[in-house]
Image (cartoon, rainbow, N blue to C red; front, side, top):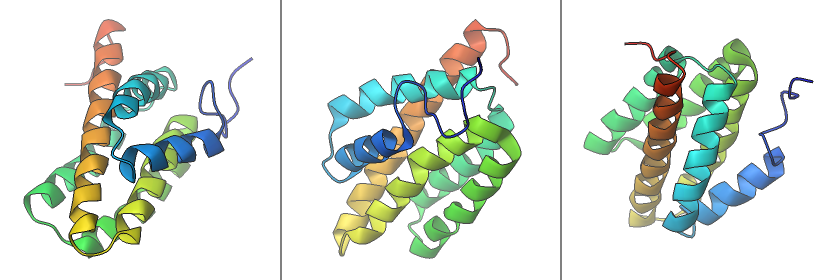
Length: 142
């Protein structure tokens, strides 16, 4: 039986939110590495396309070069669009990144940029594991 959209693999959306909180607010890089592997594999298994990830990741990379908080806020509508278009894979990506964006803005001053760096590291790690699975399965878009 295929997974339901609100499922995120082994855990529910609430567990994803809790893990994202521990990773971003608590700077838990050990958990980041573990969950990035799980989430990257799950995104690939749910047939999320590289093009759907690339637009969001490109914006995160631009924000790493030049911090503009309002551009980060605008990722939330983009994630909603990806979730609507890409089914359960897009919904999982939204469930990972939207709470991370919220946590960035809950911090004050320099804490926002610090949390954003953790968000960017998380996204990059998820993408690395996603790409690994896509290549292994011969589905990687170039």
